[in-house]
Amino acid sequence: MKTNYKQSIRTGITIFAVFLVGMWQNTLAQSGYPSRNYIPSGHSVIVPSQPEQNYPQHNNPNFYAAGIQPIINFSIHFDPLISWFSTNNYDTHNDGVVPGFNFGLSYNRYFRPNYSFSSGINIINAGGRLISKESTYLDFKNSNSVTVPPGVAVTYKITYISIPLGIKLQTSQIGHGRFFTDLGFDPKILVSGRANIPSLDIKGGNAMSELNMFNLSFHVTAGMEYPLSPNNDLEIGMGFDHNLFDTTSSKGYPSSDMVYQKSLSFRIGITF
Image (cartoon, rainbow, N blue to C red; front, side, top):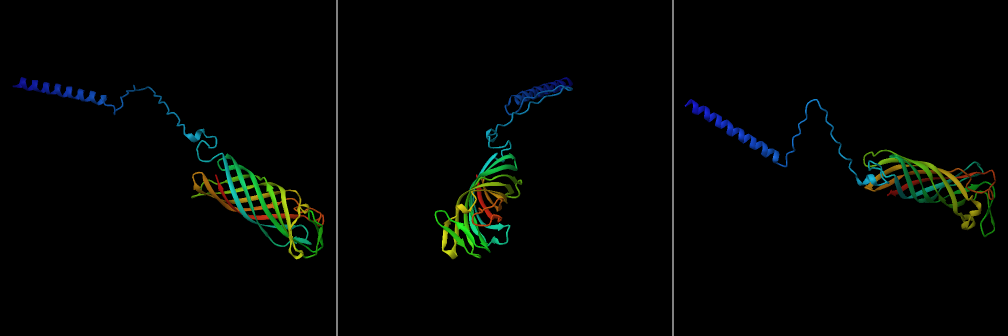
């Protein structure tokens, strides 16, 4: 009985061992399990790095490697504005503001994610009102000279084409938008100049000869960009512009008078 008992134990152990080996082989054969790699102790292992994913934006020259900020950015804007004159002579001085607009296309070339060179082209329709304590003489094109009595205001409507050159600074995204400021200079070319003198029944007189053909101003614009879509932002802000040279020629007014045009605008634009 004892011998049969031991023999039964040996048979059971053999059957169980065969069962374990079969289960082991079946487990290794399943595709869902990776093969086991045994690493001898004391040996270092070099794990190959995964190849970098080649995302589409990495091959686009208009995007940084992070795929966040385009290198080149365009925007179109229409800025309602008010403009006025300032002088260096009390005898000839400003007499109020004139409404106008600044319409144009802006171009930004980023050299850092939040910094860019700014340029573009603008059509600026502005002006101002002048009044003098002395008689002035205005020479309208294709007409006779006009004598403006003392104390009579002359309203100028002036149109420039300008090519702004500046630097735009932007913050990183704060909430749903980001803030910006743009500083620079604006070379200007005169394309139209008109004068209104209501008391003399003069409206839209051609005053090109009374205005300087070229000027230079500096601008400061600050505001916020609010995203409308993945590729478009709404741009709102305020801007200030100041001519650095005399706006009027020395024909009608004393040569010592310096007339500077200034404007305050409200930026409304869309980037794309």
